[in-house]
Image 1 (cartoon, one colour):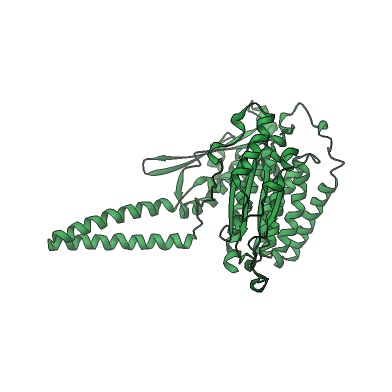
Image 2 (cartoon, one colour):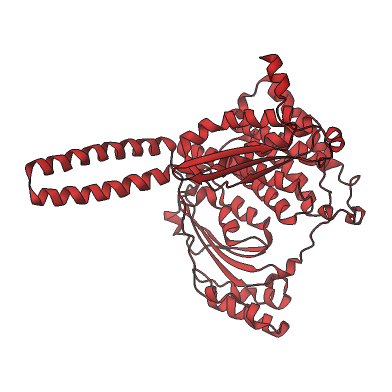
Amino acid sequence: MEQFKKKFLEEAQDLINSLENALLVLEENYGDKKCIEEVFRIMHSLKGGSSMFGFQKTDAFTHELETIYDLIRNGDLALNKEILSVTLQSVDHLKLLLEKDETLSDKELKNHELLLSKIHQISSGKDAESKNVNHIDEKNPAQKPVVEKPESFPTFYVKVKPGKDIFSNGTNPLLLIDEMHTLGHCKAFVKLNFLPEFKQLDPEKCFVAWEVLLSTEKTTDDIKDVFIFVEDQCEVEIIKICNSNILAKTEFTNHLSEIISDEEWSDTEKIIKIAESIIEKEQEDESNIIDPDLSGQTKRATISNIRVSSDKLDDLMNLVSELVTTQASLSLFAENNNIPELTGIAENIEKLSRQLRDNTFEICLIPIETIMIRFKRLVRDLSNELNKEIQFIAEGTETELDKSIIEGLTDPLMHIFRNAIDHGIEDTEERLKKGKPAKGQIILKAYYSGTNVYLQIKDDGKGIDAEKIKQKA
């Protein structure tokens, strides 16, 4: 159980980083519907995982926070600066909850209750906000909600077969099916075909499966994310059956009894043909009826990335270093003893060890983008605290460095940013007097030059007062 808990904490940290980044993007455009949905999805995933692995405070806290964004995405509450500020404070608190959960200090518990109180005030005050979206300022396009038509969302057919031992790590498969219902228009059908004879029935094992029809604006990857914590214990197949919400068609729902069969699994091709014939009657454009790449063919979820402990990478680097040293000794031995066969073997080993060394070095490289969220958050929070308008711009964030170097760079870079915000960039009034734009800029630029990587930080503040430095000296 501990290994699954550790994996959850790693995944949760990624979710929180993604949540923080999405909130900062959302701050630039309150009406970004997709970003609001992304924030809600991340919170929902975090809540589900927390509940599964016993992080009760995290589960309850995230549930309350999720309520706000459910109201926002349904148009019952208007997003504003106050909500975003409380959410970002909550993100910081979630990091603490995942670390401590039930062992919070008195001060931390007080902050926990304070944040919950703020969240309740926001969610309970939805009617006093702007339930009528027509009250939104039409002159500010950033506040205009993006209206999307649910009937235009594609429909997917999903097979879900949990492993027999899925209960062993505390997973409730019903919660996974319930989470799919939050993604859009959903109909789920339980499959009992896998149940054994009564004498062979083990109440601690799972023998049921589900067929799900889901119309959603989400992608296949988003649907897979529902099962992210049980991907090794759950067979999931996702097939796109059409490009519109076929579940909204009465003619289709009337066929459900014949579509969802009593067989082990329903006939995918039959489902697609029925959906196709119904849509053909209502639409002239046949090109959007069905994705030809998925016409009745089952696509299995494949793993394109794996998570590896940094300790294992360090061990791999050490082993590669020892291999290169041993290979050099072998080449020297072959050269001194003039053994042609051994020389050929030594040359092959040298070529392989060089490739292995280069690949290992690349594995240990991570993009600078991975630490950008800390800088964005620092600029956002400190500029608000000092009542300054500052725009953070990052260029070349795909530039890669060794993970140990990036870890060592974080604190010095944070210090540079603090100095730029605190001492470099002037407040709005002073900037306007100097003829500068009201909003200051901090630019981080990363780039390769030969075998070196350069990090350049610039701001358009007042610069360094040389005379003042001389006086200090």
